[in-house]
Length: 336
Image (cartoon, rainbow, N blue to C red):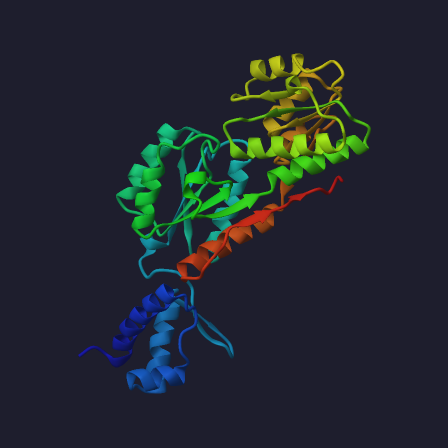
């Protein structure tokens, strides 16, 4: 017969799984465990100590033992992330900070690259289906057009994979958690700021393949109409590429009266300032690119630290069986 506290440890692992399935994060008290399993207080404490060493529970002084969401199998504590790239623009820093934050909770992070293409996203999802992760974080590819890979996401869900979208989500997966950003509200605030600064002929260069590009347009046009400054359609440029030639043509075809431009991201804003340094340029992301210009364009972003912390806490909570809801984060307007 197994040593009693080892036997109890196995029973408690079963209890932990049932508790997670029921959304219960706190184990019964030591006294309750003694009564339930007919063992001594010492046996309970030894078993709990083993669970704590494995990272399955954390003891809180005067409060009890709480489920961490970790698995005793290390491979089950790998959080998978799908993102466009891990080597340029805003992603390396975000990846580093997210990996560091998850590590404090005992989880590791593995990145999968899509190159912003459905084709590569499909390859990644097919690979993940061979060994589905418990949690999959996703920065989507194109969100304003139908995704041909939705059935693969559904299959992962059926295999008990929690899918959490970051910044925006695929509309076909509205049942998934999304830690999103209020792009529409931010664009509306930017317009109000520019109008207050005396700009009334304002253009926009946006990405039509992303829902956040559509949301930015909605905020832009709503505020322009409210200010009785409805722009002609030629003042809005829809770009599917961020190379210099695309942006140069977009800038050249803006109205001669245009004095300010709202850009979809800092990459576009940087090139716009190269083409037209007299423009007042406002963008999103607040990346290092803004600092490379002597007359820096303005750029906003969400609170990055808050974003990372919410991702980490959401991962932990879904793995503990807690019900989590989508959240919309506002942009920070330190300049306004």
